[in-house]
Amino acid sequence: MTRLREHEEDCIRELGEPFTEVHQWLDDISRCEGPDDRGYRHNRLGVEEIRRRWGDRAAKAAEIHLKSDEEMGEE
Image 1: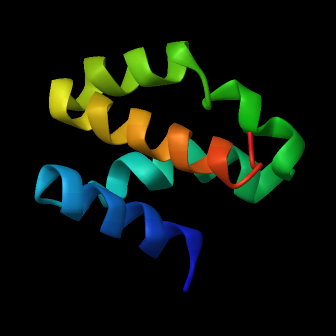
Image 2: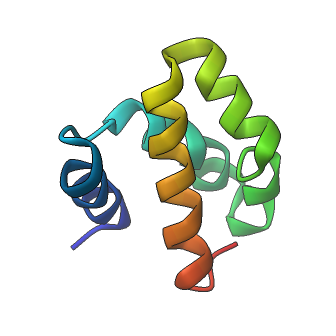
């Protein structure tokens, strides 16, 4: 299963929808530049940018994504 699908399923369980665009936005830079560039969006500023773009529930989805990545050692 891809990490995107795992992130979507986590959000479906906790929030009732997948928030695909949030997960794609968070991981977009690392897909292009590699995992070392995760820090550009995988942080509080990234969560706040998501809140600005998509709202509070999307920011919660981002927090779920970051927590999952941290647990998997993908910070």
